[in-house]
Image (cartoon, rainbow, N blue to C red; front, side, top):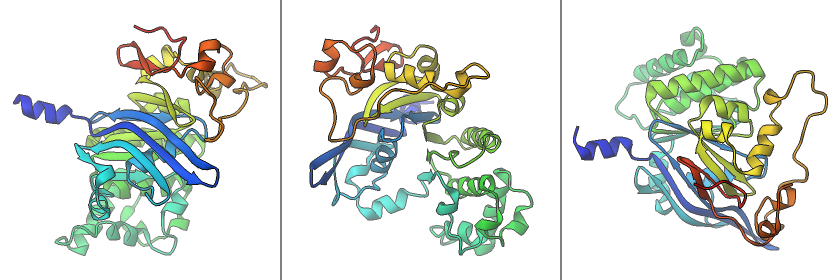
Length: 332
């Protein structure tokens, strides 16, 4: 293989550089995402984790061009396979959404049109394949439903979303997302509405399909257990800021930022059995108008020193493929 082909094969699918998102309001501009840089390598799963209000959904929405420039100021750079998403026209964005880039949402019942049968939903989403017959579109729909574990898919094409369980509806959403054979799949809290057993099945399914289709995945969640199970790399967001990122093993076995450590300490899966007093991080995520000086986490951090209250720490390496924005982190 030539060097050029090798570079193309290993090139990042998604590159986010210094992305900031601010919403203008009566009190001024609310910064929801603050100078975030993130890379999604080809064929890998990157997790984005943080509490509610950390900016996870805003980050991926901005990266997909889903936030109106009329209501928000977006700066930075977002490149999908080298193409600048932030400077694409609406027509260009429509051309890559659902094909090159697909998304799985949190609640499958609101993602599926309740007035349309599954067959209609899955054939309509193939509207770009104008030279393909309806019979072929239905065949593709049946095959994809079978791959995601829907039993007897031929007969179920005539059924409606309310006739399926929550887990089955999410499988249908995954099937619809994969019909275009996307090179990037974004999953925004796809298991939050499911019970634990179904959650495990969906995670296993996504991992298998990612390997089968060689698709890169951005997996958004507040659940560290799921992140550890499915992801290769992890980015930890706090109040719109990237505070730690790296390989999943580094993040879980050698966390450097106090916020990451606090999230891990609160993970129910890591607590002893029969615990009745569940730990929690004291305080709450600061709002966009209440950001403290210095470190964004210093008000909730029991290690905060004077420098933390005065100087915002840069994201710096702590080991290979691992960086943290903390004055107390052990740098390389």
